[in-house]
Every structure is written in structure tokens, then in C-alpha cells.
Amino acid sequence: MAQSDLLQSDPGLLLDDATGRIRYLPDAVPPERAQAWFAQLRDRIDWHALRREMYGREVDVPRLTQHFRLDDPALPAALREAAEALLALTRIEFTNVGLNFYRDGRDSVAPHNDHLEELQRGYPIALLSLGSARRMDIRSKHPPRRALHVELEPGSLLMMSWRTQLNYDHGIPKTGARVGARISAAFRRRPEHARGGFYRGA
Image (tube, rainbow, N blue to C red; front, side, top):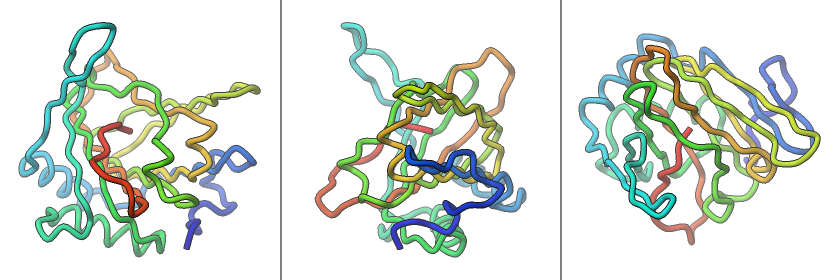
């Protein structure tokens, strides 16, 4: 099933036109379950601190990351449960999940789109948010310019169609406000030829 029922016309749609479809479900996962998954992932994942070349020097990536195939026998229980919940909700069999751990307001991800060669054509990206709320900015790449600002609440699910990656960037900006830690679990379906992990964030 290339497109989820969640990306069909309904009140949750933030965007639905030729440039793509985006839907936000603020209560996709019950709060108690979302908090339990957050605590398990925060405390039991072997988080990676990456460094990246930027402006001629190597800098820390401002968040921690990890990545799993969903058929990995060692997949953490919280991610297995989350994948099962998303399958029941969307009827889409995702193959991979990329995790980003935003420890406080200083952690962020710059505006970006997912690399299309690492996504199976026609399948959406499902972003599950755990922990504290953070704002996501979604901006069009082409005129007419438009912007969406979505407060990603704990237990929420943001669905972005494949086509949105052609036409929009998304990112989590830094904030000076006091915010708690957040984990983003980005579920994707990857083509067989794709290799490596996802370390961009949302």
C-alpha cells in the first residue's frame, strides 16, 4: 500500500495538493505508552554523538542519533511496539527507523529534506515524537513560498508523503526556551539497494 489512509482528505491534513500531503495526529499514541517508550529509549539505547564538517571545521552534530532495521532481532522492545502500533494505524510496513535525541533547546536539526534515493518511491515518512514537545518548521522550496510551524507533542505522529521531500524542507530549530528532552523516531520504507543509516532528524 503506497499511500496511507492517513494521507487522505480529513481534518488532520495540514497540506494536501500537488506539492504533497502532510497530516498531524496529536494523540496517535496514549500518553502513558509514549512516556514509557521515551524512558526506555533514552536509558537503553547506545546513542551516537556524531561530528560533521561545516564551514571548514569539524563540529558536533547538535543531537544524538541511532538507527535500526525493523527486522533486527536485537530491535529494542519499545521500537518493536511502536512499529506494531504504526502498522495497525497506517497499514504500512516500514523497514527502518532513525532516532534523534534532542537533549535540550540547544539541540536541533537544520532545514533539510530526506534523500529520495534512500526512500521507497510513493511511501510516506512517519515521525513519532516522544518526550517533550518541540516545534517543527516546514517550508516550501519553491514559490509561492509557504511555511508551517507544528508543535510536535509527545505521542504525536506527523505523516509526510514522498512528494513533500521534493517540495519542502523540514527542521527543528534551536530555542532559548526551557524545554525537556525529546526523541524523534522517523519510520521509513527503504528500497533494497539503500545502505547505511539515517542521521538527519525531525
